[in-house]
Image 1 (cartoon, one colour):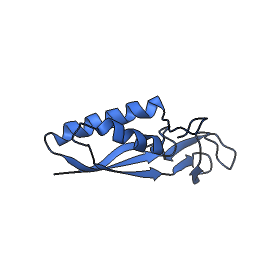
Image 2: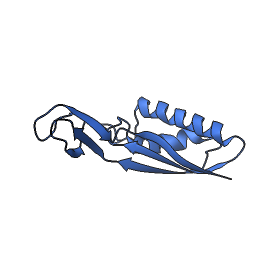
Image 3: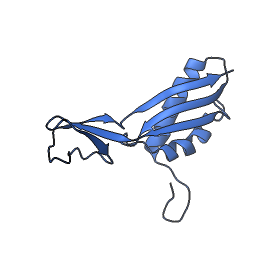
Image 4: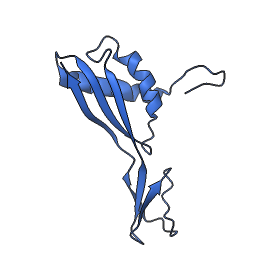
Length: 120
């Protein structure tokens, strides 16, 4: 993300999320070094994947994840309508079916998941 003067910046939310991910992965890795990490981040999750990428290098320094490759799969949003039974793409959290019904629930796109890690 870029600030008003073009400088790189990130949101505090993503910094805290990245710290939490690194803590969980480091705990699971134990004494092993993590060489790659794959995350799934849904477009409706409220987490900006580019900000996680930026924060990852900063936060992983001095941990078992230092110099690990970070792969992020960004998942599209989708909703399902209880009124008409259709499933349709969601670009945002306004849950309204093309049929006009608001009886919609998110079926994908709100994920934030550690999918896998490779250790040596």
